[in-house]
Image (cartoon, rainbow, N blue to C red; front, side, top):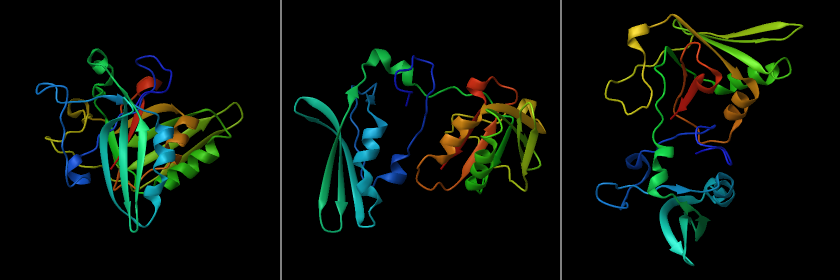
Length: 231
């Protein structure tokens, strides 16, 4: 997902869903046998507003499919509630093959340190206080399980620490787009990120993840500073 109105290479979000863990039935027919894919664009706001019914405790099933209604493509969501069925049609734009390269899986830098965050709310509370002190926060991760957040201004320098974090174990056959940098293992890695953007990301409404990982590539530019991955 790219930021609306941005040029290629601008701010973007990349994610992947495993159909086997989400759907009991999954059928896919792309543009050809060789290129068995379909790329579409849609408004996240429209999707969010139309699918509020999924929050209902009576929602029991969801069927999602690409349809064509009135000559226009749509993502159709059929939500089954305990006593009725609701259908949402979300307008989409099919992306031509010449633009598929704009949406390829990103090539991320090897990470130097990765830590599991058991309590994202705690991190969010710290950043909320820091927003009044500065615009940039220095995030430092230590291999022994310490995460430090430092903000500096002309008047004050404040540093907070979150301790007793665990480093996750990565499988060599994992499909993750990032990987540990075994050749340049570090005890400490630091990056500088925009506080407001990081706080907004952590405050976004999302399904409760099984785990959240913070991956740091030491001393990268702010366009490629860090990554939060949730499952």
